Each structure stands twice: as structure tokens, then as C-alpha cells.
Amino acid sequence: MRRPLSPRSLKVTLLSWMVPVLVLVMIGALWLSNRMLKEQVDAAYDRSLAGALRAIDLNISTASGGLSMEQPYLMLEFFELTANGRVHYRVATEDGLAEIGSPALPLPDVLPSPGTPMFYEAVFQEEPVRVAILLRDVDPPLASGHGRLVVQVAESLETRRVFINAMLRRSIERDVVGMIISVLVLVAGVIISLRPLGRLRDGLQRRDPDDLRPIESDELPDEVLPLVDALNQHMARHEAQTQAQRQFLDDASHQLRTPLSILRTQLGYAMRESDPDELRAALHAMQEGLDRAERMTNQMLALARARDAGVARHALDFETVDLRELAHGVLRTLLPAARAKRLDYGLDDGPDSMRIYGVEWLLREALMNLVDNAIRYSPIEGTVSITLSASTHLVEVGVIDTGPGMSEEDIARAGVRFRRGQAGKGKPGAGLGLAIVRTISDLHRARLALQAAQPGPGLHVSWVFRRVAS
Image (cartoon, rainbow, N blue to C red; front, side, top):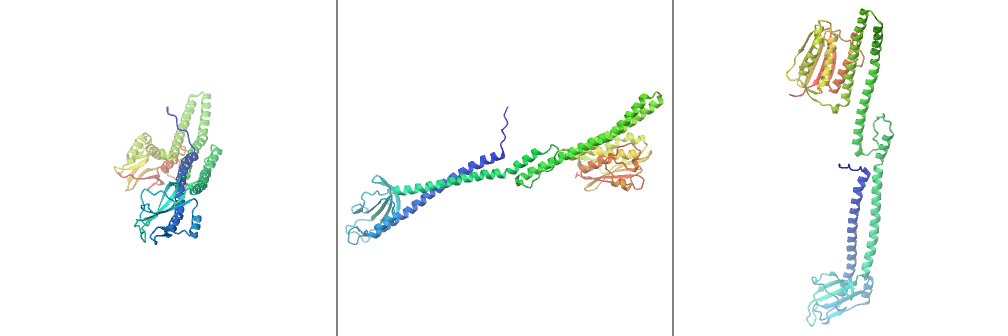
């Protein structure tokens, strides 16, 4: 079995990536800066060596027919000022027959172009030296007719290397200190930047289990805000679901207490009664009480399911639903109840395609409640009809009955839990039917409207959805 990877903190992850990369970049920059520093120091020393080379060249004379060189006192002072180590010079013809200065000063493998100084390193008298060489024509020519002149100036590298090493050492020390400071600043920056996340963690750990308030995001980095928003949405859904469950428990404890108390009283009365007729009457009363309690329980469960579906809307399986087929199914299911009251009961078909986007079992529950209410409130031999109509973008389901209808005040407050209008006083029911329909309508973003039937009496319920294109 593969072991799960050990969790790593965001701080460790960031630093484990950023610090090595920063160190490598700074090491590369250190190497490059030191190389450039050495090149610059060499260039400065070579300019000094080139000056000495030019000074010697200017003091060479062939006017007498031979090779001679003047070294005035000022030129010697110049050498002392510009040279940091031992200086050697050599002036000779290209064939080496005429020569002035340090003999056997090494020549390069390839002579430079005439008039252009060239620099190279060599070993002279068992000592590393830096040599500047200049090749030029003899003007005026020598009497012996020798070819070109070779002018060389060499400087020992010991002093130069000491200076370069000292400069490199200071540069490395400076860059290493800068690297350490940069790494410390980076670590401190990461720690300080992630400190709001630590406060967020501590705040959540200190919260009570039932504290579902939104997380404050004022001091959090922008990169964390999407996560905080998602957590707030999740807690809001959880709070709504918890509130719905708490409301269901409150409703159940409040609404079922009275029917159960009545049933207990009726049961006690029936157990004491010896008269068969009185016993039968008590049993009928108990049966009616059980029917009311059963209906109330079913409606409360339906309302709780509808509310839970509204809270977890993102988890529902929305699909294309044909309201025409749905209405036919509801009509068949409630046909026995309509026949028991000898109602004029039917469906006014709409177009062939009346498709909407929704949850089929919730829509069926809502339409069952609407039609069941219409049957319950309609008088014997009354009329209950379901109408279907559609436009380009909308689908409407209408439920029309010939019952007592609802007043303007009752219509305005329709959908309030356990509230029943004037027409419902004394009739069986819990006052939850329209609350269920209202909740399911909101979930489907449908429009629910109640108005007096035309012509009256009665109630016309209009349920409008957005149509899905065929």
C-alpha cells in the first residue's frame, strides 16, 4: 500500500523553491561580477603598461643610423608611478641583431599587426610577467637595413595578482553578505506574508462549533480571497441547512405534540368505554386524528426535503422535464380523490413540447400539493382543472378550482408555514401546501401567482417557468 505524502506547509514549499533558486542566481551573479572585476583590473593595468610602451617607443631614435633610446629622468619617474612591480623592457630589430634592454624577453607565438599593441602573459627569469608588445616600421631606416622594430615592456604579475585577489576578496565578502541579507529578507518576507493565514487558522480553531459567521477577509492576501469566498459560501450553505433542520425539529415538536396528545386522550377514553357505539365513534375520531397527523408529517417532510434541496441546489440533478407528462401523472394519481367528491376534473392540454429545466420529483411534489388543495377546497360536484400553455420562452401551468377562493390578505401571505386562510378554518390540513410550492418555485426560479378565478368563485394558481428550446 502506497503511503500518502506527508503534508508540507506553504511556507516550507515557498522557501524550498525560492531560497535555492535565489542562491544559485546570486552565485552566478557573483561569478560573473568577479570575472568582470578581474577583466576591468587587467584593463586598467594594461592601459598603464601600454602607456609605458608608448613612452619607450617615442624615445627610440634611428636618426644616427643605429638603434638608440633616450631615457630621461621624467620617463623613469613615469615608470615608477605607473608600474607596481618590476619592469623590463626590450627594443630590438625583428631579426634580433640589434637589441636594447632586457635580453631574451619572450616573444608571443604570433607577432601583432604593425602599430597595434598586444598583451600576453609569459615567464621571464622564472617569474610570471605581463608583456605589452608593439611592432612598427623603422623610420628612418637603419644603416644596416634591418627590418621592423619590436618594442616590449613587461611587468611582473605578483603585485597585480595581490591587488586583484584583494579586490576579489572584498567583492566576494560584499556579495556573500548581500546574499545572506537577501535570503534573510526573503525568509522574513514569506513569514510575514503568511502571517495572516496563521491568524486565520487560529481564529477558526477558537470558534465554537456552531459559529458559522463569514470569515473576515480584510487583511488576507488577494491570492487567498477565492479560497475564503469558497469557505464562506460553504459555511453559508451549511448554516442554511442547519437552520432548516432546526426549523424542522421545532415545527415537528410543535405541530405533532397536539395531535399526539389528542390521540392519547382518545385512546384512554376508548379503553374505558364499554359501549360498542361509543367505542366505534372514538376509533373513528382516532382514525381522523391519525390521518391529519400523517398528512401533516408527510407535508413537513416534503417541506424539509424541498428546503434541503434549495440549500444544496448545486448537488441536485437538474434535467429536462416535460410538464405535460408530469401533469398527466399527477392527474391520474389524484383521480380517486376527485371522483370521491364527484368533481368535474380534467386537463386542458397544451402544446406537444412543454419542456423545462428542473428536478422532476420536486416539481411533482409541488404540483401534487396544488391539485390536492384544489380538490380539498372545491365543493362536491365542483370543478378542478389543470391548464397548460406556452409561449416562445415561457411555460405556464394553471390550477383552477371552484372553491371559496382566498381574500387579498390571504393571497398576500400565502406560503407562510402553518398559516391557513379563512377558507381553511375547520378543514383538515397543516397549512404547509403552499409553503412547499413556494420553496420549490424559488428553487426553480419560477413565478407563482394566486388570484381569484374568473368568473368566480374559486382560485386560480398560475405557475410560470422558463421554457427549454426543443
